[in-house]
Image (cartoon, rainbow, N blue to C red; front, side):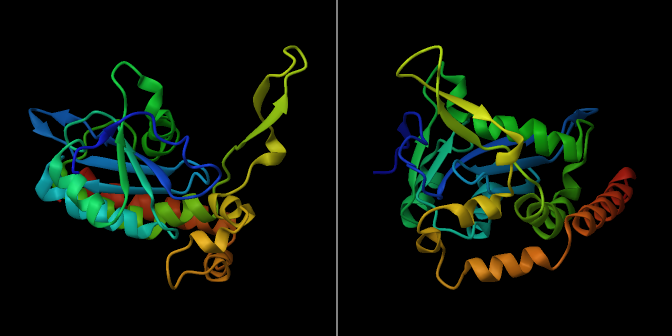
Length: 243
């Protein structure tokens, strides 16, 4: 069974980490030259996020990057949901996920909200971080290293996310509404640690104490400063077409 299931994914998560949504962001064209692509994967429950960069959306580049991205999540991945882009909806990606025992689902036709979480993070994180201007594909390896060493740790250890709280709707008896309160904001790591039986979701060899120790190595301010310095250096290298 290698064909991805066409349905909405995420309803099966039931409060458990490990069901991710994935999407891609193109860094523009210039004079007919394709820019690099960012791949953005987000866990439905914790909002744990892994961003990577690739030269092109093709099997030769994408398969290894997807496998490396999945390995960056500290918990076992059970579900992988993508839009209907051909880069994800193909037999080789399906075989990779089957090998890893990960369920593969894709967005339903004319249901654009199926992959809404990843698309929201595309704007709030990826575009905010990298902008819209053309970045030549030859810089993909440098950008990928930056994501792995600086951006992803910052997002998961130091950047709070808003999480919905379900409350009874006083205007509609029997209905539940989702509200986003500032006091419910927390980092993806804090959200992971708050889940019942969180330790049982983790990959072998990974512990919450180890993750929390990594997070405490820098304050939020120090992590933001380190991220900004690394990003400035990265864009200086990418600014020259010959660089």
